[in-house]
Length: 207
Ligand SMILES: NC(=O)c1ccc[n+]([C@@H]2O[C@H](COP(=O)([O-])OP(=O)(O)OC[C@H]3O[C@@H](n4cnc5c(N)ncnc54)[C@H](OP(=O)(O)O)[C@@H]3O)[C@@H](O)[C@H]2O)c1
Image (cartoon, rainbow, N blue to C red; front, side):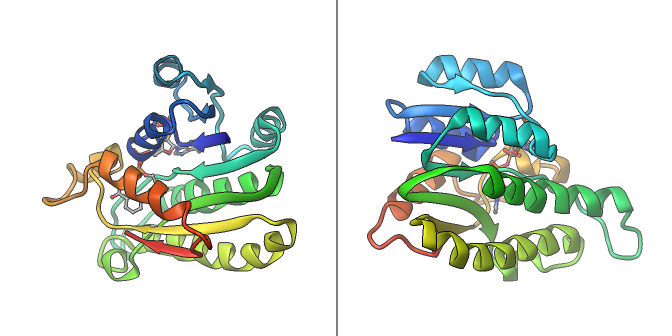
């Protein structure tokens, strides 16, 4: 199985990559050093890219070639109330969640029956004070995927949106760390792969 993990340097992406050891693994993230170390550990190829740059993303996906599995474990979070939120946080939220997913889907090539997996959040958990930008980015991602799913189905590609509970990864670092009871990334990754390969593939997988 040819697999591309986007966000492989992140908590979830790293755990997914480790579970997929033995597959034909292509690993991408922005930070080249941890990416190289992970690639050496799991026997994959490191392809560092900023996915907000469409040309870099296009080149990455051309190099990746036709995929059986695309995992988009990419994004950033920041907290700000709607009275003080800055343009930078709004743009960062939308770029890192929506643009990276849209560019990846635009340029990816897939083998028949392939799955492309994206990560969302439970609306009730994120549509809360301080998280409007993150909630809006995740809502936009879900809407984009719902329309994209209908287009790509004609190519035999299944789009899966995984709604995650809190997972203890570096995503939480700007917020002072993960909440108590957050799922371990290894456990979240295990449940993701178990769910994504169900037949028929789920459109929305809730962990
Ligand atoms: N953790 C949770 O509680 C939770 C809950 C619900 C949904 N999610 C979603 O799950 C996904 C994975 O999150 P995580 O918890 O694993 O976060 P994480 O540990 O912070 O990892 C985020 C990953 O995104 C990559 N990234 C960010 N911007 C990028 C860009 N412009 N181009 C390329 N790579 C970029 C980072 O790369 P570098 O580090 O190399 O820059 C990193 O590999 C995200 O979409 C997140 O919103 C997470």
